[in-house]
Image 1 (cartoon, rainbow, N blue to C red):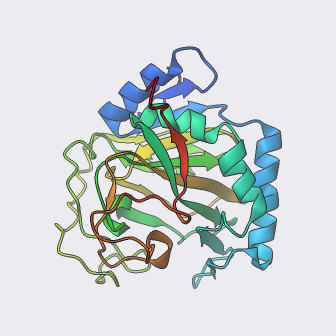
Image 2 (image 1 turned 45 degrees about the horizontal axis):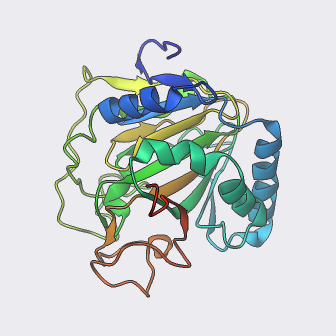
Image 3 (image 1 turned 60 degrees about the horizontal axis):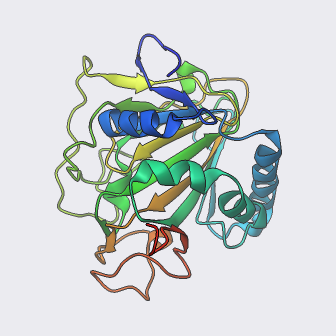
Length: 285
């Protein structure tokens, strides 16, 4: 385990290439709801992601939003579910070490691709903050084995880093989804879950600095947030979300990225849109 980042508690970190990292990282993820794998990807793989970014911003992603808020010098861009139309993203997801790094952390006999998400906060996109939320609130899914693998593409100092509420995943409590543009407004796919709790300023908030190629991994029930980017340079990440063997579709209203019209409530979330990437051998598993 590496590192410490005051004034926050530090996300537990492990070298992705170290022997035995899986066990320690899996324990940290179970305890805290988040873990960091250092040096998970070398420059050639990050270059492929950058090729994907160029393609996505040029129009290859069918779900791309570019936002510039009043008073900000910079804009922020995000793209969701682009792997089927952006070939470099597809290569990174399916051919890089990503799946084999994530699968042991999921404690699952299978690993299915859910969706990818690109987030770029350009320099001085000060108000492009991400409010406290949990990913699972937005998904039409039952089950707990849903995980996000978030790869840093730039140096991300503590002032721009994601923050996580330690242990907030442990009860698998589902909170109401938050509208990112206006956290006080009702979310468009309103559901009856509990309102998001107030975050105690004395709570154990975890964060860490990141270098290009470092990867954060967290459970979909883990509460987290992020500030805007006040730096004079880009802050970008590419994340991929994965599903394990206990996840089923529940048909709740959700964004199109998370919906497959071929699925019915109770179905396993596997198919052309959500392909199975890893599976234990029936004989040896």
